[in-house]
Amino acid sequence: MKIIIQNQQDKYQIDESISKIIEDSVLNTLKIFMDDENYEISVMIVDNQFIKELNKHYRSIDKETDVLSFPIFEFKNGELQEDIAIVEEEIPLGDIVISIEKAYEQAKEFGHSVEREIAYLTVHSVLHLLGFDHIEEEDRMLMRKYEEMVLEGMGLTR
Image (cartoon, rainbow, N blue to C red; front, side, top):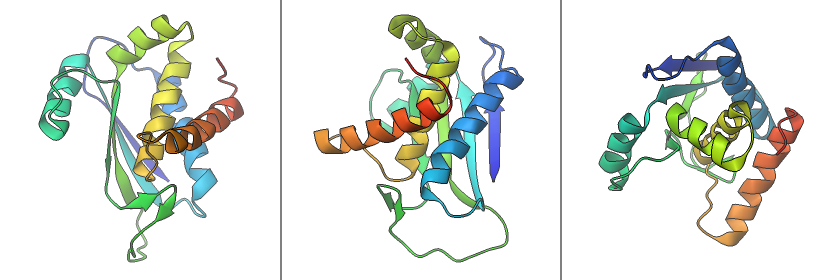
């Protein structure tokens, strides 16, 4: 498993503990759905302005958001929907962009730790890479079930 974490902002320090939370969140989410560890995910840490620009460019929504997911392959609820060639290198699943600024804001708003918020955003985004969505209520409930399962397993409850 290859998890690439890039800090593209300077408002908050991203120390080893934040990186570890992101890595653990990715690994604990993927192990529910993946049989092996031959995957790669890129995580970019940005500020609100940067994610706002991405949100406007890719989703035509001109406001900041907490996290964006850019999947490479088509999944549906954790199941790959297309054939991919088996290679010796890691298979890239996609990119995650987290606004650390928004994570701090939401942690304060929801009354829990920044660590829990970052873990939640990471798990949420990995689930999007795996084809989960929350547009329909049934899908939202399924996604929430997996989010809570991973967070509880990490000891990060509300």
